Length: 594
Image (tube, rainbow, N blue to C red; front, side, top):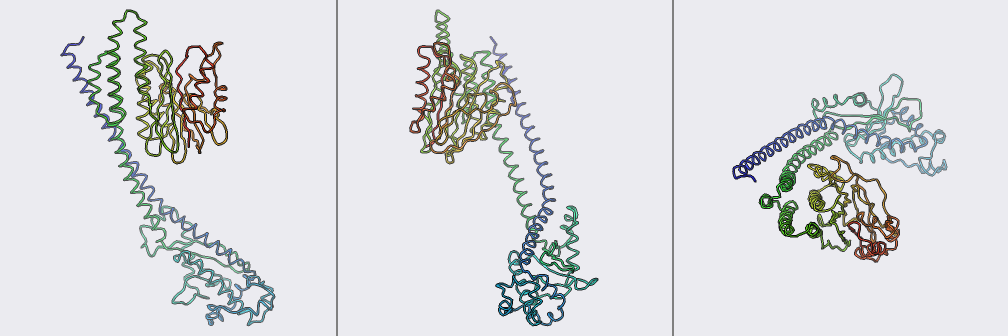
């Protein structure tokens, strides 16, 4: 027995160790926050540098789509090459009579003369057969139609500037034939305009690197900065050189860049806030209380000092599952101490062992839910029948929020009180980690790492864990070495789902698990169980087996409730086993979606 001085020294050492651990945790958290901040800012700056050139590429690509669609539409005119050459050859005459180009010429007599239904159907041969006056009217009407098409495309975005230009004679500068640029209602036709400047803008944009674009963005006045592109004018099949040029102002690109920069800053701030809150939450809600519980349980396993255990566990003030588990474990320890003293009075070892096992069994069963969540969209029921020797089977079902239901069924290795205690720790860790959030695979991964710490007894637990979205019927589940689940979908009967699953929890640290996704419609159901069902023995030492279980489930009708389904399976197992003693715990859970 330790004296008062020894206990005082142990308390001082424990307090010093606790302060040291808290200091280390704070330092690690600070380093994580600093590194996270530096990485976020670095990535943010890289995103800002790339956003301008990315926005430019997107706008240029969209603009090229406009030009390509425009070229295809203008190509519908069969005489396109003829009247474009006419515009070029008669530029001086048409410049003097721009009113003829801007007004819609009547060509009904021409269509009748050529027996054509539409102006688009007139061919170059048809045009050559016309009189000079008719050719002029036809060419002016085509010009008017082209201008209407350009105006329609201009409505897509008035910032896009389009010029169709061609060289009149070899060696001369190109002239404007068509453009959506107007000045006081006047059209640009037969003029050089700013063709050379447009060509230079297009050439600069084509060869610009990201660094050059970035340099332009900070060295050129915003309203003077212009980007351009060019595409072949497919409507023209003649011998002259013709170009379709387009330009867009930098405001289009700047708007995208400013928005991207704004969103980046918001994301950075939110990520930092969320990181800080998560670190604080995880430290004060999960690891610290769990570490205290683990230390208390470990010391209790050595000292069996119930008074000290209850005193230390009562210091845990967490208003969550960990606090509830500490209270339950305190009650468990007190109850076990009381029964232990009674067992010491018993004469035989057999009576003492049986009493201890009964206590553990009762406490274990009290920890399992007896009242199940209710909803118009689903029904759920579970039951567990312990064997004569207490084991570690357990189940759990609870609502995470109004739209999410958590389901768990598990089987702890071994028998007796160690299995019961390991079951209590496993159940509490699973529920507490599930309430924090995450997919079943992520939850099993974290709980596995916690159980592996200090697991000198090498105990493990198989787990099937699922989360149902009540409103949509989506079921996400993960399997850690547990039995195959049975699922009923549509008009098909129950069938066992044979998929590769992960190792049991508590075996190896950092084990990975896979999420499985199922869609449960009205009438669909899920049935999970422990190995006590397929491994039930008959008088000839044969086992119940998965095939017999699947056959029993195939007889279930859609009108049966989860409780009725469990009773059907249990009755089949009892009939098969007859008078044979129960080999293992039999635990089952069933969910039916209404």
